Structures are given as structure tokens and as C-alpha cells.
Image (cartoon, rainbow, N blue to C red; front, side):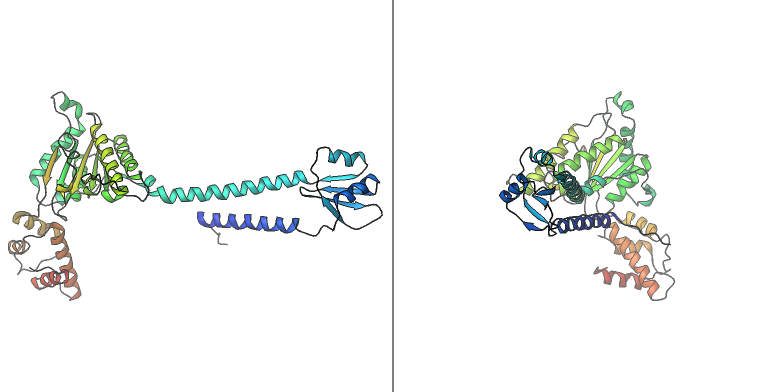
Length: 390
């Protein structure tokens, strides 16, 4: 027999339905007809004359039976001290249901509180769920320098910076402190993110990848809290490289216009400044920030001492384009009529990602036309599909 499984939302909905049905049943039970209404003075007179044989005390009324009378009657509950004792001294059989009502009220309150707290927990999870799940520490990115064409000088310099990060004490004795931050700037699509991943893999350090949009939130002050969490997690997993893509999303020049968005952005920059200033030699954390708009960044944030180095990663030159074509066609077959040098010249001004996309789309064209190799016609058709002129 197949087992029925419920997810968390179904369990909550089912619990709410059960609680609602319980309330409706209780209301129906207590709203049943309990006989004829009698004024309390008449009830008291009957009690004094000894004509009442049994009384049931309810929270809001008194149900009773008369001597030699099978009818049901009820009156108002005076709710006075000693009322029950008075009945017992008069020889009346007494049933007290106020205690059972208290139990019902207690159970109802518990159910209500459970549902109410559950709704609050769900709301908090929806608001802050991403906050708790964010910033995954990656121990192996799976990308190496051999997967990146060109940037040879940058690779050497960055490896040296990471070596200082991994061995701070050795360099401290030489009077050298670790590099706190590095900015990679340049047009999009030239491998800034890929380079940071390869650097972490080659250096054998932990890697946390994020982007400026990850710190944006509809709830005020969440952005600064996320930044603190990011640096706290990096320090716990040192040596570690923090990579922040689209850095201008949180590091844009401060604006004191007074709007809510401006204030939140200013708070995030202030927290970034505090975290960068709080780095110690033994922190073992390096921040690599990537941006397409270096000029828009806050000057106080990117000054030396916080972000010590800046590298520009432009569109690839001729030599790098040749390497990129060879790299991106390792599993593809080029036609003999294609000369890689000339093809690289035709890709002048292309970003790395644009070259990769053209070659990939050319392979799609090749397959759709039943060819076994990529020819120049396939490349031209791919460029036209992408709206690129070669």
C-alpha cells in the first residue's frame, strides 16, 4: 500500500482545518437548546422552597430541574462566591461544568497560539529564508587557470597575493601584510568571475561567490546584516576568497539625498568599510570585487588599504583570441578552410563570452544542417542570429 506523505504546508493547512472544525463542533454543542428560561428571582424562590433537585453550573448560566417535573430549565449564573456551597447545603445535586469549560478554553488557546506562531514562523522564513541559506562556501570550484586563455601576468601576480594570504606569518616577518582587496574592472563577459574561481582552485583556498544583488532586500537593514554574515562566514573558513560580482550594486558612491534606498546603500558601504578596516594579518580573507563601472564606486571604499590593487580586464587581444578559439573548439571540429589567426582577427572587439557563444551557436547551426564540421558559413549564420556583424 502506497504511503501518503504530506509536506509542511499541507500539515499546517490540515491542522488549521481540524482546529476550525473543533471550534464549530464546540459552538454547536454549547448552543443546543437547554430548556425554558426562568428569571433568577424565581429560581431563588424555588431553591428556598426546596423544589429544585439538580443543578448544572455552566460558565454563563444555571441549568436545573424541579421536583416532580421532567422539564429542563435554566437561569442566569450569578457568579457569586459561595453559590455552589449554598446549593450543596440545600441538598441539591450539583454538577460543576465550569472547570471543563476552562479546559476547553485552554485547549482552544493552545491551538490558536500554535497556528498564530506557525504563521509568524512561515512569514519570517519567507522574509529571511534566503538570508539563512546564502553564501555557500565552495572548497573546489572545478575551474583552473588552464581553462582561461591569456591573463598570464595577472595569474602570476594574483597567485603571489594568495600565497601571502595563506602564509601571513612568514610575510609578516618580512614586513609585508596580506592584500585585503582587489578590484577587477572592465567590460562584461571577459572572465572576471571565472578568473576568481580558478584562482581559488589553484591556490587551494575556500571560495564564497556572491553578487551585489544578493544584498538587496525589501526589508531595511537586511543588506548590512548580510554583509556582516558574509565576512563572518569567510573568517570561519579561512583562508578564503570572497568574490563579489556586480560590486557597484553595493559599493556605488554614497548619496545623501535622504531617500530610503540611499540610506540603505550608505549603511551597506559603512559596514563594508568597517569590515575591511577590521581585517587583521591573521584573518586569512581576501576580497575580490568585479565591476563594469569602476568610476561609480565610492572613493572611500576602494582606496588603498581596503582595496589595495586594481586590474583592468579588457576585451581579449589577438593572441588571447587565438587561444580562446582553440580552447572553445577542443570538442568541436573546425573546417580546414578556417584559419584560426584570420578568424581571431574577425573577432576583434569581441568579449570572451561573445566568442564562446558564437562558436557554440555555430556548432548548433552545423548540427541542424547535417554537417560534420564548423565552416565559415556556420559561423556567419551564428553571428547573424546573434545580431553581430563580422
